[in-house]
Image (cartoon, rainbow, N blue to C red; front, side):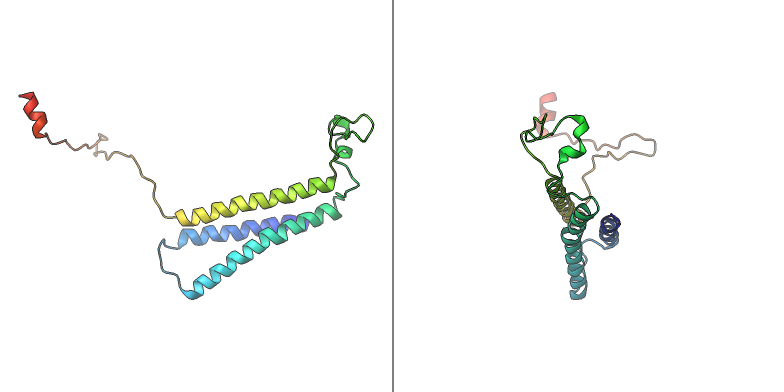
Length: 162
């Protein structure tokens, strides 16, 4: 458990560095070969960590300390609630037999999916950093009244009023 939680903490710290660099680095600044090599190595390290180390430590924790093996059923943990008891057991009405190893693997897939979503968010955030959203604020005077330009009268509009 300690190794898995520590790997998550390291992941958050590695991602925090991306935000810190992204806020300080000017948008559109040219990048040198050395900077691009360091940045590429850093991103590769984060992806190795997130897609390799973190799921491995989850699977190791689930197998060893939690003992989520194929011979342990999910129904054994929630038997008192009366649902998900497989039909192969007495008083069972659930059509599938779900083991704890299956639940372990589903959680591992969930880890991959969450990190993939975070990965896409970070790529989009980096590309969009520094862009300003269009504001619809109206410029106001010192007295708080909106400053609006007067529209020039067009020839057709003034001819119709005469």
